[in-house]
Image 1 (cartoon, rainbow over the protein chains, first blue to last red):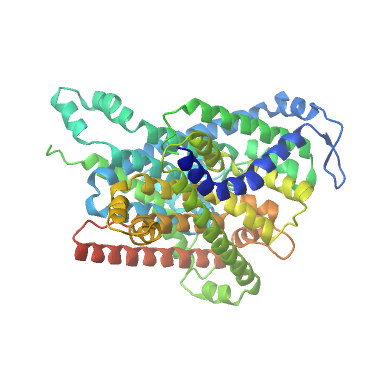
Image 2 (image 1 turned 180 degrees about the horizontal axis):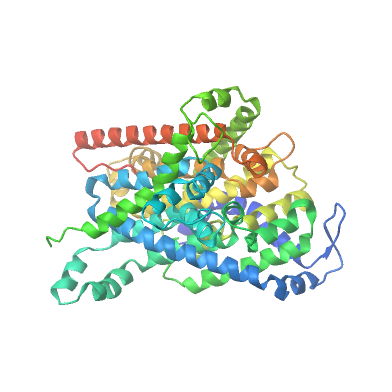
Length: 279
Length: 268
C-alpha cells in the first residue's frame, strides 16, 4: 500500500509542482491582491489590507453585467447540450467503425484560428451575410442582420465551446449499454419516459462534466461578446479584463476574479462525487 | 428495432452544417479578391502570396509554433506520467483529481490576470517566451491527463501481468506492451495541447513581452483596429486543410494496420 502510494505520488509530482507554482500560486496572489489597496503607480496594489475592492465589486451598478453574463453562460450550456447530445449519441450508437472519423470531423474546424472563426460568423451574420440572405428567401430576414444581438453572442459561444460538451458526452454514451433502451421499450415505456428514466440517468456523468466544461469558461469569456455583441456587451470577464489592462484597478479586478473563482469552486462542489470519474 | 433514426440523422446533419459553415466560408473568403469577408467579389490567390511575404506574421507564426511545440512536449510527458499515477486508487487521489480539474474550469481571464500578477510582482519572471511557456503548459496539462487517463483506466492490467509472467522486465513490458496500447491517447493528448497553445488569445495577451507576440495576440490587436486580415484567413484555411489531410491519412493507416491485425480500427 505504501509502495503504491509512493509510486503514484512520484508520477504525479512533476504535474503537481508545475500546477502548484504556475497555477495555484498565481491564484493565491490574486486573493492577496483583492485585499490590497489600489496603487496607480507601478506597484498596482499596495498595503494596507482592506475589503474596499469587494465592496466595490458588489456594487449594484455591476448587477446587470453579472446578470447578462449568467444568461449568456446558461444559454450557451443549454444550446451546447441540445446540439451536443444528439451528435454524441449518434456517433456512439450508429458510428460503427466510423466513430473515430466522425469524432475527428467534429474537431477539425477547431484547427483554424479562433479569431478567424469568430470573424467568419461576423461575416455570415452580417446584414448582407449568407444567413440573413438565406433567411430572407423564406421571409425571416432581419434588417441589419443578426450581428450585435444577444443571440449572436450565444451562437458564437456555443460554437466555441461545443467540443467541450461533445467529448465528455461521447465518452458517457460510449459506455452506455444501448440494449437498455430496447429493454425499456419492451417493458412498455414511451420515448419520453425512456429518455428521462433510462438514457439521461445513464449518461448523466457526461452531461455534468460537459456542462461544467462549458458553463464556467463561457462565464469568463469576453472576447466573443466583444466581437459579436452590441453596445451592451460587457460581461464579468470583460470587466475583470478592463481592471487589469492598462492597470486600471488591480485590487478590484482581483476581487472580481476571486468572486468568479468562488463560483467555480461552488459548482465543483455541487457536482459531488458523480462527476469525478469523468473529469 | 427496425426504426431508422431519421430525425436524429437530420439533427446531426444540422449540427455538422453549423460546425462547418464558418470554416467553409473562411476557405471561400481566403480566395476572395477583395479584403471583405462578407462579400466575395472574385477569385485570387493574392492573400496566400501576401501571407508568405509578411515578415511580421511569419515571425510571430514561428514563435507561436515553437511555443506550441515546447508546451505540447512538456505537458505530454509530465501529463502522461500523471495519468499513470492516477491509474490505481490510493489515499489522496480525489485531491489530485480536484487539482487537475482546476485548469479545465477556471475561466481563462482569471488564469491570465493571476499569472500576470504572479509573474510581474512576485516571481520576477520577465514577460515573454518563458512566462508564456510556463502558462501554456499549466493550462494544457489537464487536457493531456484527461485524454491519456481515459485510455489508461480502460486498459487491461492482465496484459502487462502476462508480459511480466513471460519474463519481461518492467521496462521491456512498458515499452512493448503498455506504450503501444496508450500511444494513440498520448498522440491525441499532444495534439490537444498543441492546439490549445497555438490558438490561445486571452492568457497569452497578458503575458506577451516586447518582441514575443504570439500570432493570436498579434491578430487580435490588429483585428480590433481594422478587422481580421485576409492573410490570417488564408493561414487558417491552410491549417484546417493540413489537419484534415493528416487526420485522414492517420485514419487510413490505422484502418489498414487494423485490417492486417484483424481487430477494429482505433485512432484514439
